[in-house]
Image (cartoon, rainbow, N blue to C red; front, side):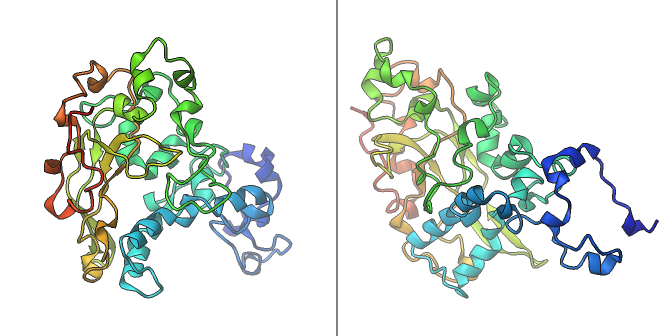
Length: 357
């Protein structure tokens, strides 16, 4: 037989799977009725995600068109709120295309292969997994902060109790959020399906008699304020094109820190006055390679932003006693913690009175 007439399938069990029984062409295209190689392979699609999945999974695909994994609207929202012009052909749109758009994922990059951003590769032969792999999909993209925190890969900092004690994978909390919601989410916190602590720990809200700290603080303090520990903060980051013509990023070393500040997105969904803040990897000159002053209203958003660190512990330094938090300025975001050129951007989240009344 000619080489092209042979098909190598590592896992023959795939032929008994639902996807294996429908045949190759329903996903990859081509014409299986032809015996000549070239015409039979005409129109072949190597990665058929977003081309053929909809024919069988229409409802999921409709939701996914609203997903941040698909739209990357979170990036766009922040850039535009900072005064960025993302209109076609603009310098910032070019920067966005070079450095942000690669984070876009398709169905196959969660259920069949690793994401292209981390160089792809099938997860397990041709197996199509209903649940994405924590290691090869979720952490592959969300590893530097979320993955390292959750798995305990930051030196001297233990992993999240949900992992170390329960071995919970990402989708046990985030299953309903991955395919988006009924409408376009502008940020990752703008999603009615987002996981909340009370989804599993509702007894904390209904039975506070044995825990006076919960009784006193539940209404105005985010859970992570008491149950998170030091997490990774990334500061200045600059994007450019390297000598080989490839998009690259130049970032300052990340810093492990813990900062409590005022809630920058306070709402009925997140009513807390005090929350954990994380410095996000941006600075005033992040896109200077592409042009000057591309983020003309940089101060419109804080650089210390609402955060949900994935390193939850039952017992933490700040919940050991009342004094560990009250009147302890070391754990509050102060003016001295903020860079001079970012003071205006963070004026509403800095805690000036660290007595924490």
